[in-house]
Length: 588
Image (cartoon, rainbow, N blue to C red; front, side, top):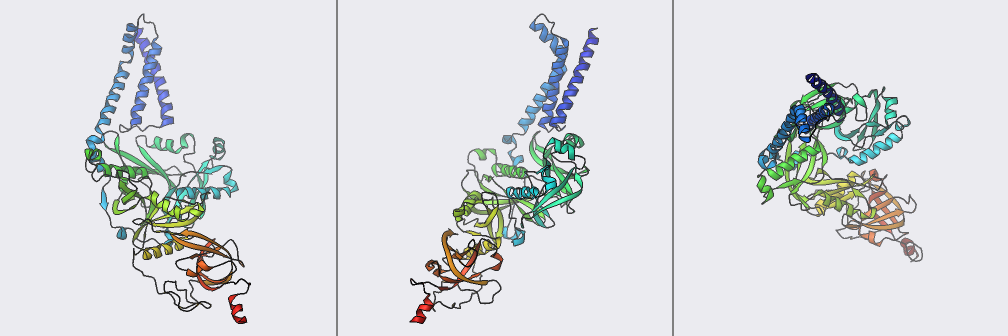
């Protein structure tokens, strides 16, 4: 009878343990993999549940504590041994992966090559420079969703988006979430009907409607939940990162990176392959990392890339060197950004001394599909110092700079960033020289910003003067023999400039790019538009008064901006009697 009773207790304990285990697995989705710490925690939980059931079902009829312990030990000896074995394996596996013993292995996770910036990073065309960061792209996507009455009441825009190359354009793609469980219930049959593509250059938002809706996403429930669907189809895979991307035909996919532990039992995360999951049909294919299709842009996440570089930077000269002498020890700066090159997306981050000073000694570019990593030696300002410089150049507007993008401008490593207002909308642009971060140029358009930056590089003798000789014609109404330092005006009829005349209505001043600038409005025109005159290029601007008649030259492409860069031509000042200088001369 005792044997029969023990079998019943075992049977019931196993049933309860299986039910608890299934519920835990369904909710928390641990990988069934010996390299996953979650897997060991899952087994330990099962041992505890089984032990508790056996003791509970065995009753508490012992006459002493010693007798109870002896009886309970006989019931739970096997799960206890399993539990203890897991603890031992976990501790040993953790010790085998300690960096103090495996510093060389950690530093070898990411091979680093030295690159040539001017050769590796081509000067990007103005129509290829991304103008938006993730926050700005998400703001535009949310505004676009608000215009769509059939979607806005049922869905919300995801707060994350992935930068990819789509049809040779840098874009961010973002997906929609169900707004609540009940809205999922009413829409689950059709699925999510669209996703959004934000062009990072033009800032246009395209809502891509799907013939068949997305059925697998993070906002689904039960078996269509993205994480659960991946786990049930790949129970042993350790997923490090899942991105939303689209192929060249616009088909939405989830790109799930599968991690392998390369150091000890639990350490040394590295991507060994990728699962591509069709977000509409649920069909999935696994690819080894060497065979990933070229349209996939994000295999290695930013966090993984930065961690692997930090291992290299700290430990490539040994563990104890990183503690004491710290010779040649470096680390990545706290931010990063992305560059689109050669139909791939590269992660950029600055490299600084491990001591945490405010300067960079170089930077790295890492291909997020192949993990090809290159280091470029370039001492200069770290990114947040450059951001402060850009914000200081337009401090009168209280704009916030986005994290910089690294560009090759005139063969110079250059930080490019957008300047945003309090609403998160891009208002201006800034370029800061990496090596000489006091060289700061701003502009209302990217073209204007680049032109200003190019001029500053010449003025500061960073590059040779390649500007064409400008006209030396003296405008009508000015005295002959102007100083040679005064800028020449464009030839009449040049297509690059247009001429405008009017009466000065208002004059404001501000320091831009370390130069005093005069912002004037014309009384006869829109008073909300100002023409910016740099004092170092327009010496007579310092003498302007309200009511003066002026002739200005400006670039037509900037005419839609609130602030337009201009050059000063003819000036006819007012006199105290209210008569113009020309009228006074006639009377004489």
